[in-house]
Each structure stands twice: as C-alpha cells, then as structure tokens.
Amino acid sequence: MKKEELSLLARIHAAQKEQGIGYPRRTVLREGKRAVMHWDGEESLIRRPDGVHDFEWGYIGKPEDIAYPAEISVNMYSKVEHNQVGAAKAASVSDEEALALWDKLLGGFQFRVKVPGALPGSYPAAAAPNVGGGAAQ
Image 1 (tube, rainbow, N blue to C red):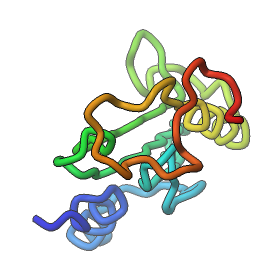
Image 2: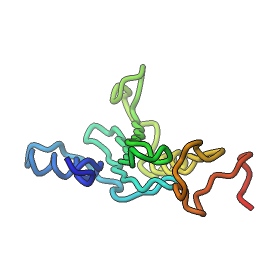
Image 3: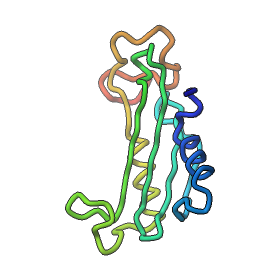
C-alpha cells in the first residue's frame, strides 16, 4: 500500500466508496489537511447522528527519520461516560466548543528539545523546538 493510501482522509474516502449508501451518516464539521508542529497531517471532525463528536487527526511519517514517526494519531470524543463513547445522555459541549477545544489541544503540542538522533534538516526553522519551553528568540 502506498503512503498516500494510508492517510486518514484517503482511508475515509475509500470506506465511503466501498460502502456506498451503507456508509454511516455524519455531519462533517471540518475535514482536511492540518499541520501539527512540523507534521503535515489530516483531520476529520464529525458529529455522529447520536450527537457524539468524533474528532481524529492522523499523520503518516518517514520511518527512516526519528523526528517524523511512522504514524501518529490523536482522537477526541464527546458524550463519554465511564470511559464509554456515547454512554452519556448528551454532549457537554456544543459543536463550536468542541472545535475550540480540539484546536487548543492540537495547538498545544510542542517539543521542549529536538529529538536526539534526528536527521540533519528534520526540523524547519519555524518549527525548531526551543530548549526551556520559552518563546523562540
């Protein structure tokens, strides 16, 4: 399987094509490319018919470079009770609040230092981590 076929959106579109009208209904809140730090990934943010917010970000990396892990995935759900998605009677956040929380979550990812052993040129200048966690000078 090619790298492009492994991406989050490619897998979603393949499932839609394969399942046709049997593909689950959903409300797409946002879908597309989304960079997190120096990783160019994709996100799919949906609300299921039962009201569950089902948010996913995925990245397929470069196995030969430790600064670009082979795969990264982040998920967030609403209507969670007793560690069961959909078990709560209602979502405790609106669509707008869920989107804001998601953006804050993904925006908070930062390296404190560069990954030891990363290949030269692994970090773009703008994404270079700052030792100590302060603002870049």
